[in-house]
Image (cartoon, rainbow, N blue to C red; front, side):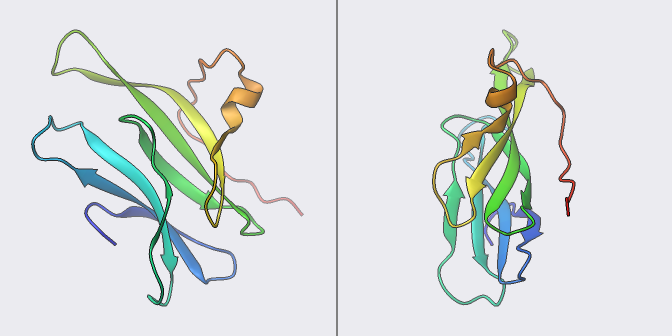
Length: 129
């Protein structure tokens, strides 16, 4: 699955696995990691598909399939750097929804928090019947 793969999430039908890969560039500081969300067939056949790549040094994770398997939800935390180059702070944690087969990610936090200063530390998917 690549360097630093984590956060495996199985689709409800068991056909797909979504996961986060942390690509590191050894020429930049420790916290300059590049998080991406991918999906692959659980049986190992076919191509691996990149679903999401943040436009900045964001941290992504917590990917979870919807009950129908139509969407993947995940958290994204932007990175803010203090004047001290050794200090790194995460802020503006947002929840996103992306179609499970790829497409545009929608910031669900922006819908409920129009000023964009969401700071939730996590989320949990609760199935409904």
